[in-house]
Length: 111
Length: 112
Image (cartoon, rainbow over all chains, first blue to last red; front, side, top):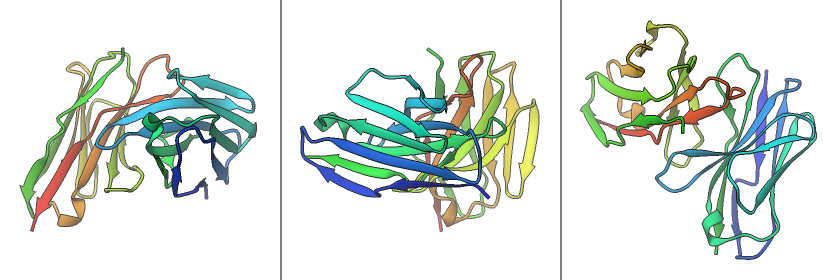
């Protein structure tokens, strides 16, 4: 069966520090991968999606970036965090048949 | 801008009642519709999907789709306190490379 792993679960970072969140999927090949952010009390905002290795599409201009170095690995990064980057970051995968399956999420607080 | 609209709630129902959650979408070409449940502090989990007009039932949950009215709903029968969560409506719009657009969610509280 397919599983999705996302870490860390919780992160507190100072303003201006770098960020790296990692997501891996097991049990499937060539999945579509997505990064979403959910601000407190708000809906889910799509940040990036990828349909294959090295293929990244950005939905929202910001100081975040994403990379897909391997088929089942998706990384969200920032060189310098802003206070407004705080939120709940969710990785998800899809095999084009059904809806998305989400990872457990990373709660990021920028202080 | 392709949008998905939901009443934010909160919606409160007594235990055992039917909870009705509603969602409208702007893109008439949308093909696939999903309901997710999100407990506080947790990630969303898929509970229902529907592709065709009409009703789809799964246990206590029924999804209803009306493409002409651009309306999708979720009914929860015999509501339980464990159903208390935020329910997110999501739509795959036409030409979107299977990107899900989410509504902002409806917070449901089932009162014992």
